Amino acid sequence: MHPTLFHIAGFAVPSHDTFVFLGVLAAGFVFARETKTRGAADERLLWIIAGTLLGGAVGAKLGTAWRYVAITHDHSLAGILLNGGRSILGGLAGAYAGAVITKRLVAYEKKTGDLFAPAVAAGMAVGRWGCFLSEQVGTPTTLPWGVRLSDATLARIPNCPYCAPGVALHPSFLYEIAFQGAMFLLLIGYFRQRVTADGDLFKIYLLAYAVFRFLVEFVRGNDVMWLGLTGSQLFLVPSTLALAVYFARRHWVERLRFTIAPLLAHDAAV
Image (cartoon, rainbow, N blue to C red; front, side, top):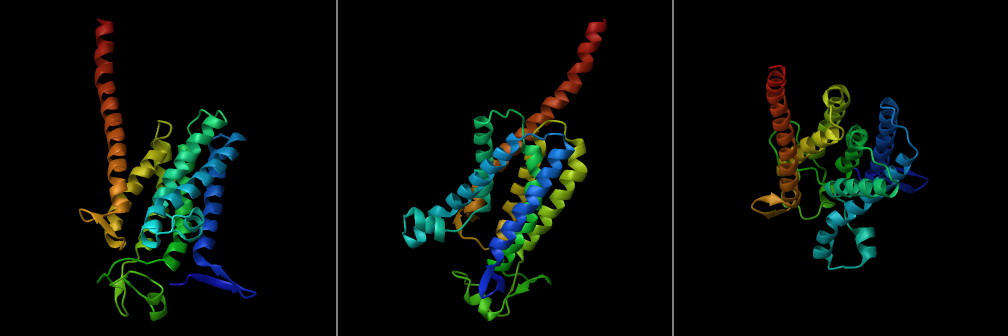
């Protein structure tokens, strides 16, 4: 689409990196607001944020390292870091690991997921505009909002047999931008007042995003790896099941508690 956002004194400003940077700023702003709103201000959170960003950057690179090596046969760390791609799912996993490790290093015992959930959604809603402007948009569609790319843009998209002049493609990144924006509003306007267990707000976001991402992968145009599923979908299957089991167990425990508690109170009164 538009890999270069604009030029400054002959220097090309890349769309992807610019919106990623803006997304980080948006996430930081929301995180600061959530910290203030919840009365959770603590200087150790700055270290946790730094560890989260570092873990996310490493995870994003490692998430696509295998594909870069398989295609280029370049096993060098410099090649992977400079020329390899980045994976959002790998970035989320790395960010989670970075937060957990940093919290242990700075001896911070409180859960921070609920602070991060709205921030991540806001950051993704902004950052994904860079992906929409610079990456392959999706598979062919007959829907009226399909995107038709110019010849110059099509020439920049490698390994895309259906990317042809006049072919309408799913704007898959716009779907994700809409999802992330909606999740941000739901997290701060609906779930925040109803979630009682610390950390569940972040788990709700992860489960919703996992389901959405699994479905949108069918129109993303990523390479199929096994059983008609992409690498991202294969990664999401066990993680989605784990989150679903967690919430199913929570629901069962809560229901059992409300069922047994009145009986115990009655027996005690008798």
